[in-house]
Amino acid sequence: MNIAAEPYPFDFIPERCALLIIDMQRDFLEPGGFGEMLGNDVSQLRRAIEPNVKLLAAWRAAKLRVIHTREGHLADLTDLHASKKNRGSPAMRIGDEGPMGRILVRGEQGHDIIPELYPQEEEPVVDKPGKGAFHATDLHDLLKHNGICQLVVTGVTTEVCVSTTVREANDRGYDCLIVEDCVASYFPEFHKWSLEMTKAQGGIFGWVSESGHLLGALEKWSASTSGANAGSAGSAANMMVNQKRESTGATKC
Ligand code: C5J
Image 1: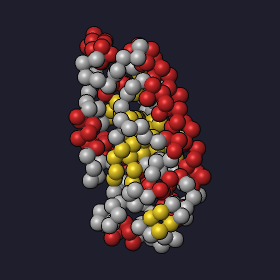
Image 2 (image 1 turned 45 degrees about the vertical axis):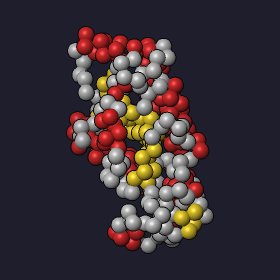
Image 3 (image 1 turned 180 degrees about the horizontal axis):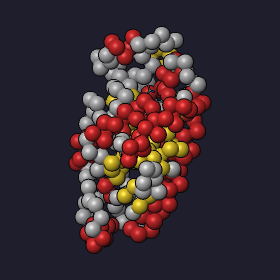
Image 4 (image 1 turned 120 degrees about the horizontal axis):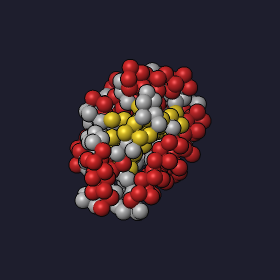
């Protein structure tokens, strides 16, 4: 199924594709968290919430794989490099007590995902100490075990954790599509140019599209599978799609 994207249409294979929502945490999107402590205007990120809510609802309705990530550290900060802790001159540092609990520490209020996009029980949440979601996590294994080879990536911030993750994924053989209106940055220019860099040179890191195109494709997918569970191995939906792909000779991943 082709999705309109840049630099050219994305060959969407729903049952092999996960929605990866990066770091939609209170620490980045709400006042009093890590983002604000670094001097950022957190309201810049909030425009990505509504498009993510719609995309997540459609993804769940299509019964496809959803994975969330959170950036944060262990309470004893043993997974926090001195280089990350001491960088710059923020108002408060990681581990300090802020209005939403200790800054960027797992289990604290600020570390949690915003209520609008709260994970459902069956949706894995990958806790990561770094910017990239593959570094020091089991994300690669999780994707492999679930037969995932494509990622639709949303979340914050475009040029930091989203871009780092897409680059890591690209080097591990995943096809990534970033949803432009579902990612955001404290710096509009960085947002724009990281998307440009992603899709330049024939899609050197991946593809860029808009949520409207994904929503249309998910609707078609849901209609074609008539509510069958696309995620379960050997399901009628999977067999139907595989047969269709074999008959058209389209690429399998
Ligand atoms: C940052 C992130 N910006 N999730 N983290 O420090 O992009």
